[in-house]
Image (cartoon, rainbow, N blue to C red):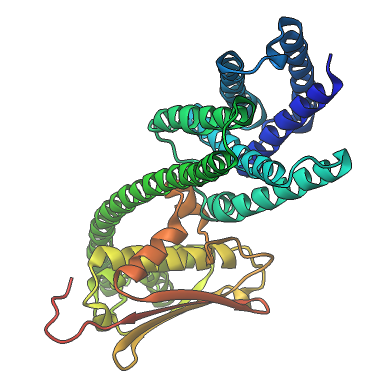
Length: 442
């Protein structure tokens, strides 16, 4: 067995595996991940050495021309295909996501390999230590740039769970454009191609790799955007239904409280129950008297609904709100935005034992052409964030993007939403510009 060829083959497979892991590392791992990884590494090295031995025995490794290009194309295509089950063994994900990261990693490795090959071709032969150092340096630089440009945005924006069957087209393009083109380029010097042609084709190959990565990730972003838009529309429809249901519940509670108060007055007139007992009973019933009046029906509904929850949990919900200032917003958006905001506060406050800190303050006011909303509450421990906003556990479990939904609602009206902490005090602030006069309100 040719030791140099074996070392080169193992190094190439290791580069491909590392490039794929750069993209797939953020995926949820399966149990015994490290044991699986070590086992796969050992298997990969063994299979690579077997392949090198077969190539040496058949003479393919020493031939030049189409036969070798075809053999290497089949070999590297098999590596790409086998990378998918390898990723599935390591990570808890779908076939399509594994296929996405396999092709992305393979393309990145090919880009690094092509850049290193171009450097070798233009600088000529060097000593083995210098060649290894250059290979390591080029690979690290290309991988770092690939991580910053492509892998990091996937981690940051949580796009890794997006699936698209169009990945089959990407796989075909990687096989033809990336792998086949690269193998042809590597065989050109031995076939007598001119230096200018080789350099030009290697540059084109590098550009093709960057283009393929860009297309692949644009496909991912587009699919993610469509998924988010559809989810937001479903959420908005759910909020509209939730608002109507809550409004009906509040009205039913008010009607029922009105009837009960009439019955209490009848009991009081009969002197059947003591006045003190009746007063105490009326005070307890007043908790369920939905009397929040801000000037906006949607805001009244959500605050009444959350107020009942707070009362049940022993939380004081204070509210100073000019509901009329929100009249330009769609009722479902008001219900969604303030429902999420108060849910976040309730989730944080209900963990506190100090009754003086089981308090939520909410203000809404018109501040000269802008509507500002402020929610303030105490918290304990760490605030779980998603894109700079806290997650409400109940909403997150139900729809998975409560924080993003809040931001989307505010930005729909050209506003902004920010959070801050000071000690054990958490603040959420929303600022939305009032529409100009004459602009239709939603």
